Length: 207
Image (cartoon, rainbow, N blue to C red; front, side, top):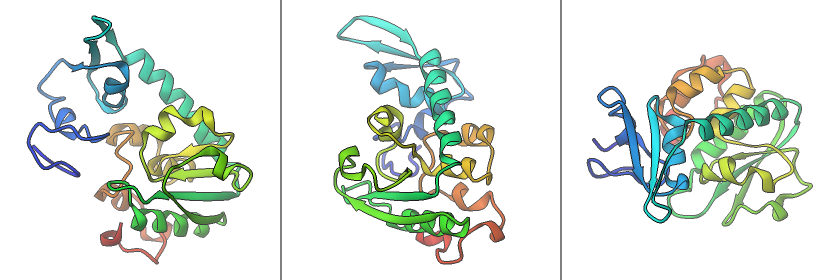
């Protein structure tokens, strides 16, 4: 059934795999007709085995090992973020990526924890435009930027959910349970932490 960004039953749009993960309790595995690129996002958040059947290479590839390797790298970036003080919270003006409410909320959260955080509004998120200005970045645009393009940046580029782990507001295990890529304006972002831990400037409806 459709949820979040989706309009139609069975639809998969961008990094929203909620229609597929909703079947985790009914299937033994997921088969994605496409490359590793298309299947990796699902492998990062599904509790089931995920396979990519690439019509070009005519190979079926299991993705669990690849996903686990990505998650280990992401956790290393979370640890690196904890020593950073100056943080840019990046929001894109591209359609479908304009999460200004979430970005402002994150700026308030980080400032409340004593970090020097500011909002960065861009069209394209490019390392060369941000080099030297920040010790870390928070990415509210396409989550694949953090997953696949982290090596282009010299600083950690965390997703919103990863920031919560870095600040000690939730655990790594809880983030994985809720969905590694599901770190955007959904109710769990607000529901899991006490009001004393959250910035007062932004209400849940604005996220």
